[in-house]
Amino acid sequence: MVRSRPLVVMLVAVVLMIVGMGLARAAASEFRGLASMQVAPSSIPTLLGPIDQSGRTGWDCVPEKTAISEHGKDAGLPDDAGR
Amino acid sequence: MAYRWVLIVLLAAMFQPATLDAQTYSQTRPVPQTTNRAVLGRLALEREIHERFAIGFDRELHGRWKEAAAEFTRILSLRPREPQGSTACYDLGLAQAQMGAYDAASASFNAAINRDDGFIAARANLVSVDLLRNDLGSARRDADDLIARVPASSRALYEHGIVALDNNDAQAALRDFGVLLSRDPSYAIGRYDFALAEIAAGRLDDAERELRSALTLVPTFARARFALGAVLLRQGKRGQARTAFDQAARDANDLTLRNLAASMGQSF
Image (tube, rainbow over the protein chains, first blue to last red):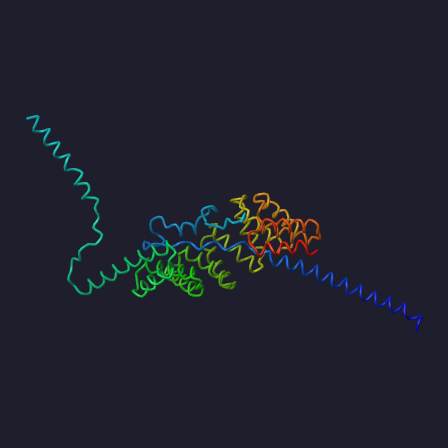
């Protein structure tokens, strides 16, 4: 009985070590998951503005032109990188 | 005799400006040329639509969305012709979206598109509203329809790319943001989204390079810095990741991102 005590202590230590490593690995995985979850795409562009009664084909319809524009700077895309 | 001719020329010159003024003066409210009850009724209806459109448009320009919505709802009840019908649906959808009534806004933008299939502004706003409603299925369908009609449009590419990222379609997102960046390589947000697509495709080294490019363009781009931290963490570069999270916490204006970055920096 007395001789087996060091063996039991050693077994408990090994079990605790394995549990500890498992917990550490789970925590690391959770951090990675948490970080990845927060990496969201950039914002939705603001809605295109109102159109008067001459309609989208009317003279200088800014929202329709913005929607069609091939140039990023004229397309009303989000520009809040530094904020 | 010569004196008389000079007088005639002077008098003619005196009356000329008045004549020009009269010519440029527009008659905005023509007097009806009939007493027919049906014709007069139709003219009154058109007048009401015209006036309400002017009021609703002005209210939207000033952010008075509720008043604008009431005007466009009334216009639609009067069954306007095109392009007023589709435009009233569009403007109503815009007011509803600004008031947070996204389901109603979606219905209004769809109604605008049903009346005018080529209404690209309505299609673009519909995709935005789908995303605001968190309806990824509709967003996907509507973004596909949008880009099929205007494949070169920067806004269509951006919205399609965002929807692709939300749907974990890395290849579509890479294509969309790739085209955007080929046109404007200095668009930091485009680089950030392109990097997210690379992360989704499992190309962590490329994503790291892309995020570093975005940060070269805008060093205080906190969201990109945070994403870089996440990539470095997945690559096992814990020290660099901690530095990136700490920097993101310092740069972020968004309180949630700042707190998250700070706790990430301190947790490992």
